[in-house]
Image (cartoon, rainbow, N blue to C red; front, side, top):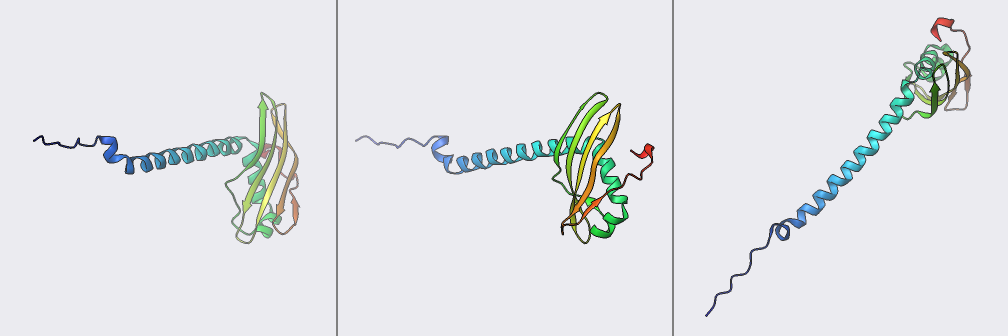
Length: 144
């Protein structure tokens, strides 16, 4: 009479039911982290160009923008647009979301850099209700 002892299952046979979902969840989390990291990098690049903070500061100081959006006016996360610089020249086209206590809007910036100085061709806020506020060029040259 021989006693047949069944072979003990190997690690994979014992653990695949929890290992496969955990591995899939880790892969999915890594994919999401890469997408978020890439988006943060792109938004960070757009926010680091000089037209962004200059335009936002002008919009936040403009009485008509404050009246339309409400205080405080701050920027949203999803900046859209493009920028390019090459030494003393460059260009920027940005759409910056603005959020106030009463309404939201979008700050549109079209700027060109010549001889190291940014000049704004378009600097306007479109308020959610349809109003358009063109920001006047009343800033001193040192603030540009």
